[in-house]
Length: 193
Image (cartoon, rainbow, N blue to C red; front, side):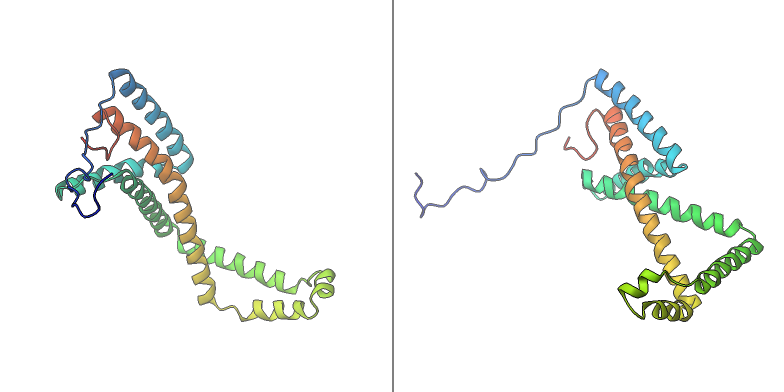
């Protein structure tokens, strides 16, 4: 038992950073093959956006190394997600810029026609039985929606879709990037070494 009045040496409390062991040649080859498969599948399903994840991970790690720090694994994951979101936003911006203006007008006309048709359709009878007067409130709220509110809701929905896309395919790209890092360096990216 130690004496509570004695000071404890602080050097014994500091964790020592031990270098991560290097992976063998067989593990590195299997990591490269697995990374290529994961990235290929992710690229096919994300229409190429998953490739941005390992690129963003490499750029973020390089920036942190320039500052004299080590980017942890969670930082690699955040960089992968941000890379995919940026790729999706750039892709969506390019597509929307290249679409002819007549197409946007046709889309707006189709949306307005669908809204007009749905406002003329009476609500189901069970809705009036459950909540009397709700049908009139719904019709009034549909008529009050402005173009600005519709645009804001559409932008919010597209933003949420880009974030969810980034979460899913960014994680897939992060797995591929971590495996590529293991195959190239012999240890996981972000490991002490």
